[in-house]
Length: 413
Ligand code: NIG
Ligand code: FE
Image (cartoon, rainbow, N blue to C red; front, side, top):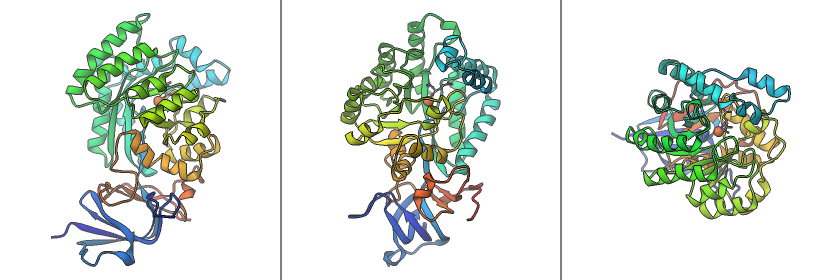
């Protein structure tokens, strides 16, 4: 029997431009044919191959359909929250000063260590459901609030568990080099030794898809970052980097020399960093939520990145310290208002370019052979994804060819 499903009566934004078309790749009166978890065919219904004999048909009611959204940078697993630190920052204490005084990331580490695996799973699951309600079908989750082998394992296991129990893809990233934990106070190189020793163990347990570090004055030096990357590359793991968020450390060029999948934040990125990222094909992941919540004023060099042809992704950076937001669509909006991306760039940034930042070539567009992850929206045009905020237009979500429930809570116009 045919495993084909025909999803008809859709207006498609394929993000695969036809010759002479714009980047949206719009197809009116469109349809998708899926086979198992993959897209077998995309086009205008009138062009459906005569040989296609779908076993079932689904009427999408004329809805706008885009690829499933990809949130490519989150720190979803942690204990506690940092609302009091937010109040301190509003009183004028800087993020760096709070970190140097032992707060910041370290306070989340204490709360994470104190939480059970079940508690971490329950809170991270609620956050994942918020992102999913807006059409997220692929989610990256970093560790980095455990900072001991046992606690990092716990956080990565929770991330993996979300991927096996919820209808979405989870990619895990080991961010052991996020901060120096209290037991290594004053011994950052000793802590990097430990991180490098844990990584083969975590990898052997199948817990790591990529390796990240925080290269910053209040994080780790380029030399320390290099040691983590050497270990990752030795295990065949791809790397990414929190780079030039608060200062220019030359982190982007360093990461690019390891063919990093992405460099993230980039407010203080230099021209050399841009050139290195371009040469390496490294994606720039823009995080307007962190820029907004830290009340930053220095913008990432968007125009220079665009001119160099560096791919631009956009993500929530969800975390308790710098970006407690759980709306990828709000990030698309802020990528336009704060960073001056076009709505098309912002939507590409939460789909095809975000997938690229995770090394995933099989999603982010609607095209034959891509994963059958797509979203039907209560919208007329896909540029509205970066326009509305505080409203969830998500109507139906299909993951791996299966419609998932609960789907979004879309309100028809
Ligand atoms: O992506 N910059 C480093 N890591 C996080 C924030 C971590 C925290 O403050 O808890 C970020 O902004
Ligand atoms: Fe981050």
